[in-house]
Image 1 (cartoon, helix red, strand yellow):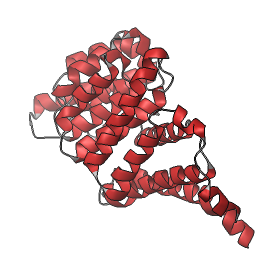
Image 2 (cartoon, one colour):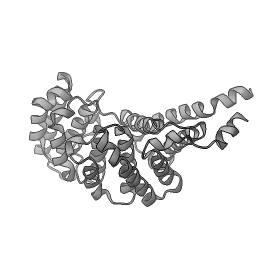
Image 3 (cartoon, helix red, strand yellow):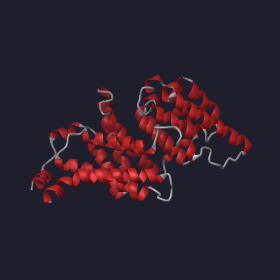
Length: 296
């Protein structure tokens, strides 16, 4: 009965004090439940527009909410086969390359890698990495790693990759051990290309990518994205009802990734599937565990 009363309660006035939070929930609903990707993107656009005035008065007050809206917007554009517009759209929203969050930059690298258009993002990532204000970000090393492995190597930019590893970027992004491992990978790659030049071959073996320890792991990226969306939704000050809706949306997002977006035939998908399943169990327990315990 307590749950029913919470569901019938009207949202508190403070909910309207967080611009864009409701539109983020709407975007997630359109994206996951209805698969209405144009509507999801429009909701993200509306949420970002609502933050424009607030950001002008109080910069970065809603930074994570803005990033969460961009994350869903990027996914929606990709589903609409508008991936060419992603980088331009992100730059429009953040104004300057240097202001783009590390998580967004990682998503852009992975997206353009998936469509084999790494050259489109090369200059942007290079500029972002050279910005001194970004070196203190927690995701800086992951961006550097993705740039080297998924952008420079496929494009044959081993000389630039070596320069990054040995200059200020490499000093900040990697430990000495990681730099040596990465340099070994680059040397092996160059030797392989010299002996057996094949433009259609995979430039970076999967095993080689796994040799850089504790950097840019797929599971960690997934955790970061999920925490980002969860924190952004939690920042809006909600009732028990809207809290339940929030958790349900995230749970459905996990199920969507687990059941629809992952190819279980790929060995690289195993870590994703196991981690997603674990997160799904945690979410289920957090949402419904108390009811099970009270009924037992």
